[in-house]
Image (cartoon, rainbow, N blue to C red; front, side, top):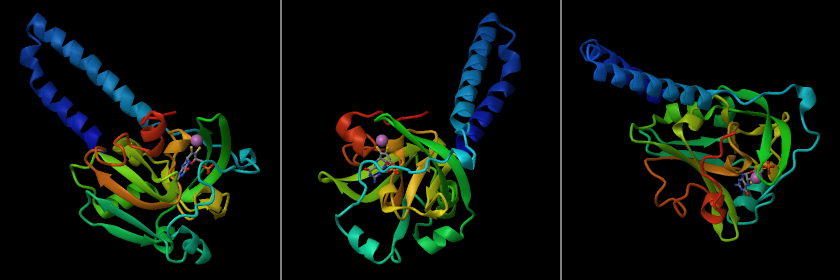
Length: 246
Ligand SMILES: Nc1nc2c(c(=O)[nH]1)N[C@H]1C(S)=C(S)[C@@H](COP(=O)(O)O)O[C@H]1N2
Ligand SMILES: [Mo]
């Protein structure tokens, strides 16, 4: 990960200059402070990269309920339902060198990850499901994310009370191994209520971050000017935390 390389490089540069500094008491104090800074930065990264628990098949919930939009009626969505999503595209764009426009077939041919995880909604319910899809990192690497990208925005097809649903994460969550673009739930194509034909799974985050009806993945330098600037539909409207780590 770029950020980790940066920390390692910064640490190495720092150590290179340390022998002389260490000869003074003030220098020692600075080194101790830097060491504890490095330790806590490292702990934070390790914690953010830890995997969410995965469960055995026997733990899968018999019914994975839908929440929020469960049957979008706006825009092109009903036509896509009629077409069996044969013409659905996922755009990967924004701050990338090589923008992509992928069909579901393109997405199903990428290397896949399957994971049985628990979804936790802030409204107080949970469900365990088995999700399959390519890691978002595979798409971002294929699109060649630029150096100035800091966030990934997820665009959705559903319009809820006048605004398009959207969400966003930082690059740590975007590159987390369990962050996948899911097309399959419990071995079947996603039901409409759960985000057909594509939805994000971001397993270290609360339910509202898992954007359904995914149409585009957009790399940006800042969340200003996206929606109302708070990074997501519920963040803009109800003051939900942008960072919803679990
Ligand atoms: N596009 C879109 N994504 C969404 C929502 C939504 O209304 N629209 N609801 C969110 C919330 S609050 C939750 S808990 C989950 C629900 O996922 P589910 O419908 O598969 O249970 O989707 C999230 N992603
Ligand atoms: Mo939710």
